Length: 432
Image 1 (spheres, rainbow, N blue to C red):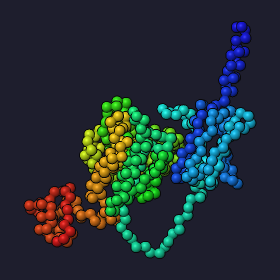
Image 2 (cartoon, helix red, strand yellow; image 1 turned 120 degrees about the vertical axis):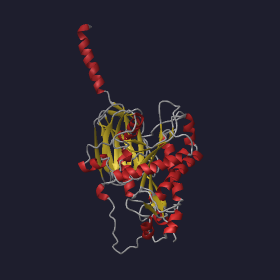
Image 3 (cartoon, rainbow, N blue to C red; image 1 turned 30 degrees about the vertical axis):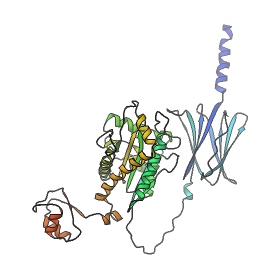
Image 4 (spheres, rainbow, N blue to C red; image 1 turned 60 degrees about the horizontal axis):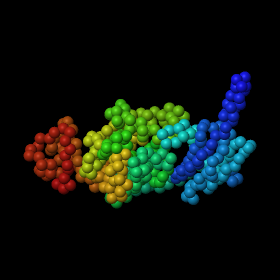
């Protein structure tokens, strides 16, 4: 027997090497501008992809694999996929045929296991770049009108990235979307303000694409909404973050930043294939003016959240969240509560509490835009005039600048004499 053992062992190894990979599940996530198909597999596989026309379809062949169950089918509202078919090819391979509603660009990649999923093959179906719509330019003179302040609201996570999960099974991606929708509705009731949702349903958007969408909407402010989690269920309270130039402001903030940024790994995004200019824009943290505005609005929003009760951090925190790395849009990230805390998980599911959260955030936004309404907006026109006292200013010169009487300016700002302090903001009366 000992003489035949090496031969038996060799046969056993060959049999293991030949064992096919299993495709255990197929998930479909539809976004407005893409569809993601995720194949849960038992191990890395070799595969090929092919795009065919007449009719349009995408073909993915996986070598030495078998399918455990029928694939999920797309929703009828999917903009790209009408159906998914499977068959056995060459006896040992699995073929997936994705029936398409329109021509697409295909991007695919393998992902290694993480805390929630095992090995995965991801197929992204995207709008072809050459088919971007051509905008017709009207050269007739246009009357410039005051515009609304635009606030981009980003509900964190989505699709195959559920975010944190509460003790009762509540997913972060679900509750933050509800809060985002309620905040949108409250903002859209305000004169001179308009909100846009970055994610409107349960699908995943790459972190950098969230910033790009905010820029497409010409947003004046970007708000990312999340629900925190920690291994100790007693930890509770909300926090507000801005981008840090020097990394996280504390060890806990660094840990949290790594967790949020890790969702981009779920999406399979890498900066390796980006050109130097784009990479430098994404990673450059020197946007001083934008960061200063972010800190101001974050501080006011945190003040609004304090009205709901205990906050986890009483000051604005800073961390390296990828979603805050817009160089030109003030951006904040709100951790609304700890979904890992049973009491706060229950509150996060409560529509009434979601409304309270949205109202507290709106209160902070009001305070910020009352003082810093962008030029050309309705809020800027209706906001009281203010003057920041600079070195060399005198009260009489400020009165002449705004065509108001010195006495009226003095009374309006409750001044007992004409002395003013550099850095103080004076309110300008509407009438003389």
